[in-house]
Image (cartoon, rainbow, N blue to C red; front, side):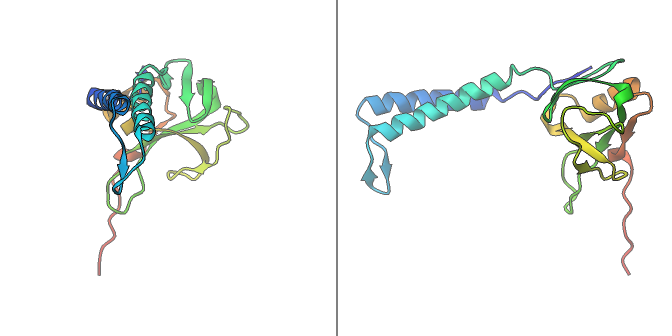
Amino acid sequence: MELRRSRPHLFWIAFFLLGGLLTMWASQNGWELRVLIVPVGSGPLFVFGLVSCLGALALVASAFRPTPIVIDEAGLRLRVAGINRCVPWASIDAVLLERPVSTTGGGVPRLVLVPATGVDVGVAAEYANKVDGRLSIILAGLDSLRASQDEVVRAFERYADGRFINESSTPTKVADEV
């Protein structure tokens, strides 16, 4: 299964592209940028429009980036968190779907990779996960992926052979108030 990045909204691409083109056109046709009543000329207005257009093009380019996480029988193909390689299941101790730590109760679960001892996956494991405290690598938050949490859980349960821990579905203990 491929866990693809979420798509940028077409509205924002169109907004920034058309706004930038309109701003660049206006700067070339006598408009000026005024900052607190002081006119600074058409140059800064043109630069603002250019930056807006480049931002829209960056959003379009982000839609064509390669799939960050591919899950299959052989392991994980990762293009995320500084890792750009295939990691076989033998090199992985666990993959966690970790519940976010938040005092307000909000937040998005995230995928955390716990590499096997002595295995180099390309980046240093510096994050102590919330499940068992082992050093881990945060792969991605579920809000940055198109797949739903249920689809991610089903894919890892199918391919991970017991290495998947769904910590986000376990109930939290509520402290009794006295």
